[in-house]
Amino acid sequence: MKSGMDNGMAGQAASNMYAEFQTARDQANAANEGRYNDILGRMDQLYGRSMGGLDSLSSQGRDDIDRRFRESGAAGQQSLVNRGLGNSTITENFRQGNTEAASAEQRRLADQIAMRRIGLDVDLSGQRMGVMERRTDEAPDLNMMAQLAMQAGAAGVPVGASAKAG
Image 1 (tube, rainbow, N blue to C red):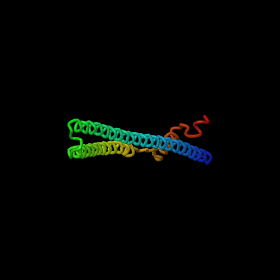
Image 2: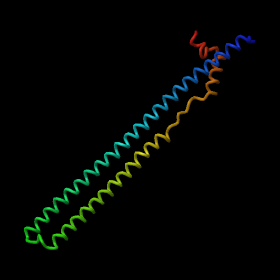
Image 3: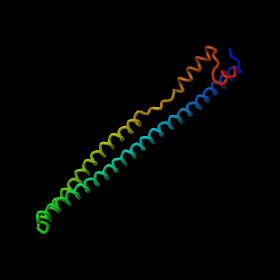
Image 4: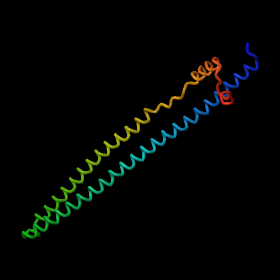
């Protein structure tokens, strides 16, 4: 038969073990939360860089289209002048046709970039949601820990603070 002192010591050991377990659990949860937030933050940075890259790509593409049609327009105008058609209605029709072709090319570029943006958004957002979905952060069950402590105590194995003292 155990004395009251033995029961008190066992209760204190169980209490100490629970406190140690809870402290370790809180530290692990904080570390997990930090890693999770770091991953999401890095994914947000990747998203921003990727979308920003599309913006600069579209800007360069628009500039290239403008330059190409400006140069072809100037060459076409000069060709008309060289043929003696510089003052005719053909010149204005040529200019309108060139402007319309440039606008159509700009719209095609905008459509391509929009499709890339949508694809990139879906891909990166899907990756981010996948990280969020796979997060489990399951801590050990307190009941299981209590059972292990009781088994250890029944076997005479020191548990918790008493294990450190010995």
